Image (cartoon, rainbow, N blue to C red):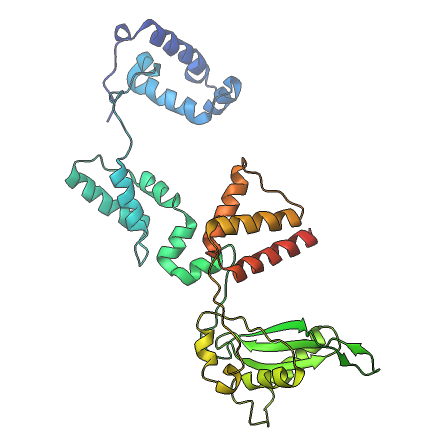
Length: 338
């Protein structure tokens, strides 16, 4: 619907000057047949602005070229916070809904509540501004969120033999190698991630390599004729302890003591059990600062980025020392690569 023309006398002096200045810009297009695109290039303005001025001039005359004050000036045109939260809540529902469906429902609710109904573009913008991590968590669940957005993703096996881990260490005992020289042997242990059971191992004077790991895996996979192996191989640790006459420290997840109690021959040799508690936030920050300094980096107290990174690590690891250590090892490897 065309607006009712406003007489020039109803405009202020500044508005009339503005209208005449815009008319002078449009004059070549109105009287000389110059294209609107050429007018826009000559006066360094956008083509859409020239088109809008031409439309307003044809509908309202010279007065249409003046800038008029909004009728709702002084009134808030922002969407109520409640309406924004409504759009966000509907966008996070499962199953996911289209922006058009959310807009229709919000418009209906706004009419009932007496709000000004938001346009479709405003609803789409609110949905677009939602955190991708929050949308993934709401629509796909915690597992998908951890895999895509967690700083350190901790994979967990869902059943026995789904995932094995290999670990290598030197034993604090001297044995004679092939040449008769005393040396510390290397122990490569294969552990089932789900049950935390030792399924295979290899003793060698050779440092851990891909070959020694492959041989340990072969021993873990191969059928064991020794009846003492059973499913766990924990009795093999007892044999190592009895024959090697060295200290053995077992570190595991909560509940390890109860699991070991099922194997009395091994459990009878446990001297004491110490339960590790998670680190507090202050302890975690102190540990990270010390480790950062060791890596040649310094955490600045007044730097927002450094403090935000510390807070994220504290939140994600939850004070779990093993997870913190694993994260720091990854940081150290990245620094070595770069």
